[in-house]
Amino acid sequence: MEGWGSPSRHLNKRTFRGSLWLRRQETIKVCHVDLSNPKFFVLLVRIDREQARQSIAQGCRFCGAKLHRSDYPRKPRGCPPEIRTQFESRFSASCSRCRKRMTPPSIRFMARRTYLACWVALSAARVPGQHSAQSQICRALGVSRHTLARWRRWWQEGFVRSAFWQDQCARFMPAIGERALPESLLERFTGPAVEALLRLLLFLAPLSVRH
Ligand SMILES: [Zn+2]
Image 1 (tube, rainbow, N blue to C red):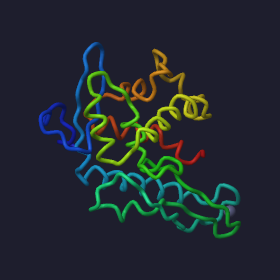
Image 2: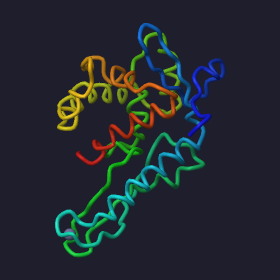
Image 3: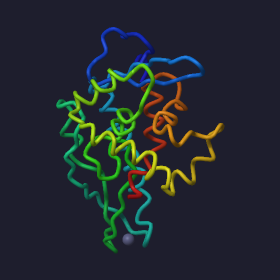
């Protein structure tokens, strides 16, 4: 992970897939994550695989029997072509005895959305002074204004009402401004940009299995 996402290094040559902007105190801190670099996506797969391995090793939560891998096919949007095949399935398992399914949390996929979770968070954020860069990301990803507005509405309505957020919101002090989601949440994940983004995605991962 080291060496990735060093802040402000490539300010004048942002890649189309975008950056993560984190507002800190009174200044806008620009952190760059080179999201056209497949390495970042390889890391997402690795983390998901490890999470799946751990969850599957625990066995069936209903009857305790062994779980067998039984992945779901996915048709994701927003990942570099070099690594797309590794995003074409969502890790999952089913019980060898009672047949119930267990799908581990994922940092790649957010519920059934076709766009990857990182885009649902990053492109729906409104950061002052970054409007053109934000619309550049959306153009590059082929996300329509309508989709973007829908995602933003989800952050401010569906996310806020979710059992997950009801459990977690008290962890943030001062409280997160829910009318400024998702940027009000993004700005709390600070540090080197890749790390910050990964921590955000790990934080949100439980949402990937609750819908
Ligand atoms: Zn079972």
